[in-house]
Structure formats: C-alpha cells, structure tokens
Amino acid sequence: MTDLAHIRSDFPILDQKMNGHPLIYLDSAATSQKPAAVIDAVADFYRNANANVHRGAYSLSNDATDLYEGARATVAGFVNADVGEIAFNRGTTSALNQVAYGWGLYNLKPGDRILLTLMEHHANIVPWQLVSRHTGAELVYVPHTGDYALDLDAFSELLDERVKVVGITAMSNVLGTINPVRRIADAAHEVGALVVVDAAQAVPHMAVDAKAMDADFLAFSGHKMLGPTGIGVLYGKAELLEAMEPAEGGGEMISDVQLESSTWAAVPHKFEAGTPPIAEAIGLAAAVDYLQAIGMDDVRDHEIEITRYALDRLGAIDGLTIFGPADVSNRGGAVSFTLADIHPHDLATILDQRGVAIRAGHHCARPLARSLNTPATARASFYVYNVLSDVDALVDGLQEAREIFGVA
Amino acid sequence: MSLNELYREVILDHYRAPRHHDHLGDPSGTAEGKNPLCGDEVTVEITLDGEVISEVAAIGVGCSISQASASMMSEAVTGKSLAEVEELVRKFKVMMAIEESDEEIVNPDRPGEALGDLEALQGVRKFPVRIKCADLPWITLQQALEAAE
Picture (cartoon, each protein chain N blue to C red):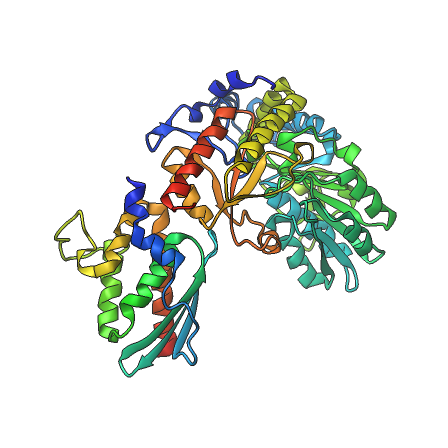
C-alpha cells in the first residue's frame, strides 16, 4: 500500500491518549485533523500578516490581500478551475445556500422540478426546500439501488424538461458511494438542467476536476480536507457566476451603493459579503499544498487499501451489516454499519473507552437513513493519517461490544 | 470509568424486553420526545385516575440507555401519585447530576440509593455524553403530565 505511515507525526492532535488509550480518529468524514503545516500557516498569518483585505491603503493590507488571493489561486488549481470561478464562504452548506438563493430563487417557478438524490446530505436538501417554498418548484428524489449505487434507470425516468436543477453528492458521506457525476451532468445538460455538486466528501479524498466533471456549481469545505473550519468554496462556471445574484449583501461585495439600490463587485467578490475568512483561506491553501505534496492519487490509493481492509475485517464479524458498496473502486473511505441489535450510540461509547472515535447517528442524511430502514448507523471514516492497525482497534472494540451485549 | 457500570445487566434486560411497550387505549396525556442530534425517540402515554398515574406506556427507538430508562421509568411511575412522581423525577435528576440538590447525597458511590431499580442507571452519570439519553423519557413524562392537565 502507499506508505503514508510517516505522515502521522505531522498531525499533533493524534499524539495523545483518550480514556487511557492512544487516540484513534475515525471520524474524518465529519471533520479532518490538521497537519502542523496548516496550524502554522494560520498562526503565522495572525502573527505576521493580519490585516483586512481589499483595502490596500497600506502595505500590511496589501500583503494580506496577496495571501488571500493567492489562496484562491491555489484552491482553483486544485480543482482545475479558473481563479475567477472560485468564491470563498463559510463551508459547503453556505456555498449550496448561495446557489439555492442566488440562482434558484430567481430562476425556478411553479411546475419546475429540483431533482435530488436520496443520498444527499441535509446541506443539499434543506436549502432547496426553503427555495421551493418561495418558487413553487417541486422536489423529486432519485433512489439508490440495493447495491447502494445511484439508481440510474430511475434517474433517467425522472429527468425531463421540467427538471431545472440536479443536486448530487459526488461521494456519499454515509454510504461512501462515488456517483458518476459526469454522466449525470451530460444527461442533465441534455434537458437544459444545471448540475450542483456537493463535493464535500470527494474533494478531500480523490482528484476532482470541476471542468472534467462538467459541474455547473461545485461546493466543498476546508475543514474536511485538512484545512480550518469556517472556510468553504463555491466553484461555478464563469458565465453562471456572472449571471447569478448574491445571496448575501454587505461590505466588500459592492461596486457602488446608492440609497435605493447598489451594483455589485465583479465575480467572485460579489459573493463574498463582509470580511471574508482570511486566515482560514490561507490555512486551506496550506492544506491544499500538503495534499498536493502527497499527491491525490496516493491519497486515494491509501484510502482504498484501508477501506478494503476495513470491509474485509468488519464483514467477518457476525451480525455486522455494512451499508455501502462492497467494491472499493466505487466508494470512498466512509464505512457505515450496524452490529446486531446494539445501537450505534452504544457502539460509539464502548469504542470511545478504547480511544476509538467514530460517528453514530443519521449523519445529517435522515431521508437516506429512512430509505435504509435504520434510524441510525455507526460510521468509521478514514483519511491520510489512518493506518491498518486503526481498523484492528475498531474491530477489537466491536468484539468487546458483542461481549457486553451478549450477542451470540 | 467502567463499561460494566454503564451496561448493567438490568439495563440490557430492559433494552431487550421493554416493559409497558403497548399503546394505551385512551390516554389522558401523550408526549413525543426526541433527541434530534442522535435520533433517540420515545413516546410516553399516561392515564390519570384522579391524582394517580394508573397506566403508562413508553414506546420508542434508540440506544440502550434511552430505551432502558424509558422502560424503567414506566415501571417506576405506574400506580404512583402525582406528588410521588414529582419527587421521583427530582431524585432521578439529582442522581444523574442534571439537577443540584440541597440534600447531601448520603452515599456518593450510590447516588441513586433511594431509587430502587432505577439505581442501575447511576453509572450513566460517569458518561456525560449519555446523560441526555437517560433523561429523554423523564422529560417526555413531564410533558405528557402537562398535556394531561
């Protein structure tokens, strides 16, 4: 496997004990840990370069602006976007709300359809529900197959001229499923619909090329890709961003303000109202540099190896059910499961006593949990700093859970 | 912290075989409780006979602690007067360290000493993230009582 064992020491937080055991962090799908390079980049900015941006009346502000705009260029390169197609915001949720309120609110009308998948995180559902209340557009959902893949037949049947926007996750945060976004985009564009990609799970874990995907909009978060919290990215095709209205108004995003109306700053700044997350953007750029130094193909290979090992070892536990594709080439490193009649929260508590941190619950995807007919699952998710022995610790903890609960 | 203190046999028994788990015919009060972040759910129905809770149902889905607590609560309050239930709820919340008490806890190792079988839940207080699980059925009971008034 791709040997990334040495990079574990780049993550200071992992060098600690939790409940008397070495911390084994298996919740990177919720948020990732941060390498020293990212922590230092943020601290260094506050120590040496902090000023507000785009108000270049003095050198320090110019320096801060250069760093902030440099971060934009770094992030743009990472997903093969032009620098003007990248707007910073608070996170994927904020980015998707910008599309719903900036594009959806002005372009949807009664009779139109918003086509989502049952795999969507609440962040790509609730904004569309809010917008549908204003516009009268109807929400329609594509189910998944028994193999936890997107049901492409159902997608084809549901896709018609009424569909104006397709919202799709590139990688499910619950099932791990990697969706065929390019294929979805080609079909959607045939009927004139836009494609809004939730790439919060995909961008941290695999090479993502927004142009090759032909995404119209694509959203992701810094904190899931080794970067700080509070920074997110909205990619949009240049002509769409030009035409889109800002969802938030305020300082920094205007060209001129009159008493009754205003004109907007040029793209992408018209989508960045108020003082932006400057240090966070710089930290995100450091995270991108760190990931690129490893190489996204190696990141992906490393996770495939760990995920394959996890699926094998978990699958061998009596009474354990995995909710997600069995083929590692079609999935990411989020592995959701249940174990006999032991509730996921009980699993999480038992594992926590051994220093193993997993997520338990509906993972902000209740419609999916309902379709799986299970109100909650346990989820272990992996990233660059995980090693195969982390999976062993998980399995040992699950065996203890079976003993405590007397599962035969 | 020992997992054996949390997962006492009596708790697992109530989890696997919850008591008072059938809906009542014509309850005087009903409430639905949810912990939206973790997904635990419990519905509590009560029938009042004057000042006495004559029947209780506690039906739900969720973790062993929330569902065992619901089952044990339903046993503990059946046949009790409203005043007795109020005192029981108070003592439960003191045991769980949810509420402060002026009374000194006589035996700090057994803060739930006066609560009979419910004492089995006292291990939960050492697992702060799980206290809300144990508390859910009791909050819901209080809401069902309010609905009945």
